[in-house]
Image 1 (spheres, rainbow, N blue to C red):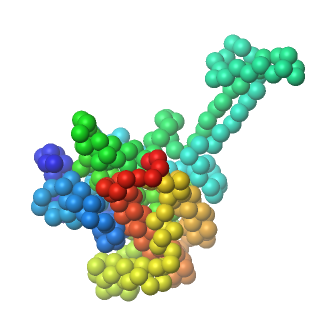
Image 2 (cartoon, protein in one colour):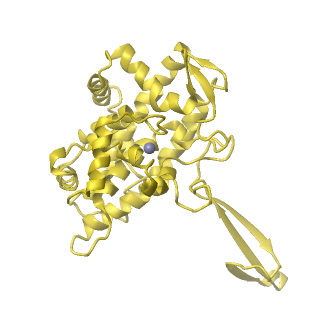
Image 3 (tube, protein in one colour):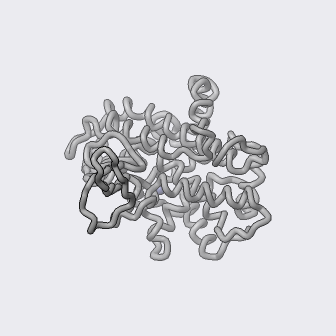
Length: 333
Ligand SMILES: [Zn+2]
């Protein structure tokens, strides 16, 4: 598949331009997630990814994983900017794709979804179902958030992978790059932050001597400080260290990270639930507006960031392996 000129130009930007004021894992974070994932690709996935990326990429997905951050600023791609995160209501430390409410009423004027005849009271009850979930945009359009986007692009890739004979109208190169990026984002704890502070974006803090906001601390600053402090500013060295932890300290956890309940292909709701839990326990904790965050915060939060990057990589690989596997699936998608 060939990329359009516009897509190509945007892709080149990813490689050459620093993303200023980023609102996602920075480019180091996304590169790390995708690089770790590449190490766990099965043969079918390696072949599919190579086929979808431009020839010059030589199958290196990691080089394209920040592409959605660059294009979201362009007018024709603005609609994608809400797909990088999901917010929970104020101080709710759990995420729910759907928060459901049921109301009973006798009023027949309103539109109802269900009418029930209750024999005990010989009355007809009208049931009103209001479904309110966390996954929506500012105008309450359902599914417009990072978890909805992961489901959507997973389904697009599945439909092409399992129905190769039928006509597929999706741009699968874009679907692969969006899925790979959003899988990273959903693992950044503050990408499932509170609506009131926009996932920490409005919480102004100092990172050592540098004024910034809490969201940026988690997107970029913790990773950058770790690179400078421990890896001589070498991203490949940091990735190597995480790969080594995956083979040693975390090796027993990897199978559970990879698994997806009920034989589903993608499990973003679980990852978002973990993220808001970590946001409450680590990101927001001791980080009120005006706080100076230094060694105590950095040293206690770095292990969380490292594990989320590793989990993002493992789960991206597992999801793509499930999508592109030639093996017949036992149940559902
Ligand atoms: Zn993003």
